[in-house]
Amino acid sequence: MRREWELEDLIECWTLDEAEVELLANKSGATRLGFALMLKFFELEGRFPRREDVPKAAVDYMAGQVKVDAALFAEYRWSGSTIEYHRAQIRRFHGFREPTVADEDKLTFWLADKICPVETSRERLRAALLARCREDRTEPPTPKQIERLAGAAEALFEREFTATTMRRFPASSAVALEDLIAAPDPDPNSEGEAGAAGARSFLQELKEDPGPLQLETLLAEIVKLERVKAIGLPDNLFEGVSEKVVEVWWARAMRMYPSDFAAAPEPIRLTLLAALCWVRKAEMIDGLVELLIQLVHKISVRAEKKVENELSSEFRRVQGKYGILARLAQAALDLPEELVRKAIYPVVGTATLADIIAEAKANEKELRTRVRVKLRGSYSRHYRRGLPKLLRALDFHCNNTTFQPVMDALKLLDRYADSEAVFYDRAETVPIDHVVPEDWQEAVVDERGRIERIPYELCVLVALRKAIRRREIWVEGGTIWRNPEADLPADFDDNRDVHYEALKKPRDPAAFIADLQRRHTAALDRLETALRKGTTGGVKITRKKGRAVDQRPAAGQAGGAGGPEGAEGGDLPPLGCDRPAGRAQGRRPRHRLHRRLHLGGLADRHRPGGAAATAVALPVRAGDECRDQAGGRRRDP
Image (cartoon, rainbow, N blue to C red; front, side):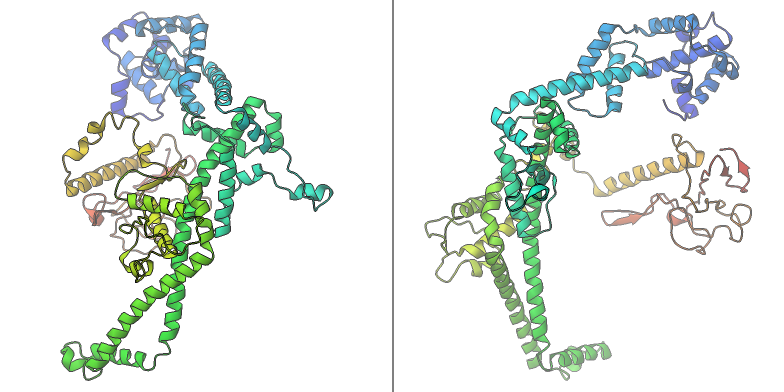
């Protein structure tokens, strides 16, 4: 139930109609008031309340309707034959019935079959159970009974889930999963406990994250992924349950030691290990894609930095160049109004300027050439040995024809993975468009028209990196880099016209921004009003320990009673602002949640009037008291 009620909400939700008033005809005093509150509470929540569930505002409002003193509500008896009779009346009035043992069993099976496969939160299970009871016009069980039913449903789902999982993977996979928790073989070169301690099980390696960004990390992750794939878990292993359920079992397995697995029953043990391998396989695939993206970027940036440093050191040895450029810049500053011919040419002649331009162009071409040489050397000597393994470990796919040349290039690289040839065979169809940039073609294709493998592989890796980041090429088995169509709604194909309805009529960008600003402003205004009225759902607004409570007076007031001793009113910074006091008093003290809204190149204050709008000083709770805005006097919150 809501803890704070506005008058409009009370009128809408807690007003008795004629039929409900007739039920109160033979009741008076505390019985009349208590029955009326139970009647409306059951209508709103679908269950009977406890005394503490009924809001005080609702008690006061209902007391005015039934002409009974609100204080009499404390005398209403919540046990005995009277309240049981009242509950029976209310159930008949709303068309509900009491739950039976069969209803509880039915709810348990329904939760286990429909809700537990998609929800893991106990709170959501309770909410689903209450909604189901309301739909069936059945009075829900008590809170303790609901907890018992939810626990029974979770246990029932766990038994069915583990049994189904074990039926789906073959016996060889079960043996491989059991081997994960087997004791590691001791190091033959070591003796005793030292050798056993030095050995690491694959289960421990499986739980570890990748190491630093380098080729060795890439190769180690590929080996780890291949070992997980060798377990042979089927693709439909967790079909019918949500990813949240699988992740809960994975998180549970991540916290367990081999001895914990050994102590668990076989169905639970194998399901936990299967969930661990399933989630970790997807994480390793995503991690390999991330490593590929970062490594390609890393070798490119390192090559450019090395070449730039080399060229910079060479430029310093050119005699007179900096002096010429300095005189050129000084002449431009001293004679800004003069023509180029009169101001610049006497200082630096046309021939010298032409030489500088020619040298700059030559240096730019030399920069590109050197970068390509550095990239080729770094890739061929170090990173190239991991490329074939990476391409075989990941299964790339593409849903369009624009990036099909990149997919064809990947297949070509895989075919030549074990070849020692320097150039591709002339009979091969080597994709160039959308794969090899224009400034790289002279490095890929020689003067005889042959295509060299090493620079071409570099171009393929760069093109693959760009396509993956754009989600044009995706990876099978991953979660982050999976098929983008998997992120669409399940009914997208059947209701494509509904999903594209908003795109049939193009929206005006200015109207879209104005509407977003309006909704943003309204939401912040509601929050500000709630904070000022203290209707924030029972949340106590306080400051951190050791910091003063904001006691700033409202706009237009002078300092004094509302501010701390020794400070002038209006000079305190707003909440959450680190600027020192002493800003202009005319500036509006803004709440820390208010920000300027930047959308589509437009910037404007979130409320009409901008900085000139009326200031609002928020009262901030401190313990059980707060300051009044007008005079700083104490009042009860």
